[in-house]
Length: 114
Length: 114
Image 1 (spheres, each protein chain N blue to C red):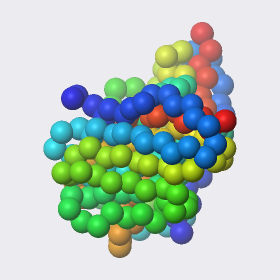
Image 2 (image 1 turned 45 degrees about the vertical axis):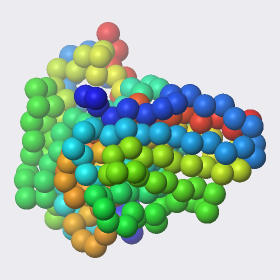
Image 3 (image 1 turned 180 degrees about the vertical axis):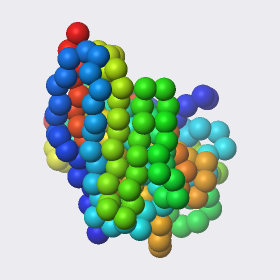
């Protein structure tokens, strides 16, 4: 059974800092990995999708990397802003069988202090 | 619509009553998912629909939970004889391809069972 772990559970940084969020998964036979952002009381917003054949994806100040063999992904946020404060979730989709549902980590709650 | 639409956004009900939650996916998306997010918990997969295939119901927690998807579009999640432990945010998501593409989430339906 796929398990997804996110460390740290919570992170507080001053505005302007670069930061890294970590995600690890136990089954490396993934189809893709997706990073989401969730604001309080809201649904999830997709940030980046990395296919299993890719190493990284970039969108603006965000960069996500994937090391499938070691079961790890990182989300790098450059020059953090207070508006980046949210919970960040990673999720993986397995590549085999009917397990098309995403398995989510429990998230990292990020607070960027002005 | 432009995004995944869920209704109601909030539902308060009494223990033992039945509830229906509705999800209207992005037009053209063939895959539709239901997830549950309890307070302080990660996202729990409930059910997955892909086109006209039989749904993957492996995540439904009990036989009080059921879901249908009519005409390959709108989906309804029904919870019968609600219990207090059913209180959670129920999130719906859809994607273009066979469950392996980027997921787009609705804002969720917050269910409170008194």
